[in-house]
Length: 261
Image (cartoon, rainbow, N blue to C red; front, side, top):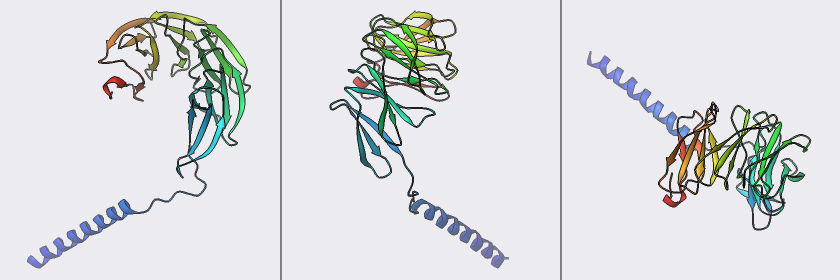
């Protein structure tokens, strides 16, 4: 009986050792990346009006692309192999062809744009121009402006709702949020929010928008079904970037003065 028990213990111990060896081998095995793997980051340089292309696999700068003064709002196009951005001082959106690293288009959008956003299907880009109080829609394939609307004073950016039906524009000077129909750029509503709104985050179901208010240390919650202000949520400092969890369960608010979120 004792021999049989010792045999079983020996088998169990051997299985444990084999499992441990396999896990250790997996943990310390070398990582191999295929030679043709490419992963790039694009960084705007406001000092010299260029965009740096960083190879994240080899960790080095592989190109510098002149784009114009004060590049801002760099975004990868959702369907095309392009990088979009705006020149705040130049008043235009620019398009970088990713495979060649060359500028394929410069599209005038109005004075002092800061950011660009895309429709979910990638057909259109939207840019708000702070200096001219305008919103434009751009056909991404042709590079032509296909829609134009007036906004409030000093619009900060244009943000598409996840369902692609609405364009939200916070007007910093007016402390309002303009809601536009994305297909026509017709004004749907103008909603008062906390002072000096800038950034916008939207629930995944497009029901509620959150707007950071740098002049009031608050975040405004807006019901997009009824187009009304729900509440102004007090922050411990001036809110900056907003980040919504993919499931909509939590909103992260960056507060630079607190060095935290």
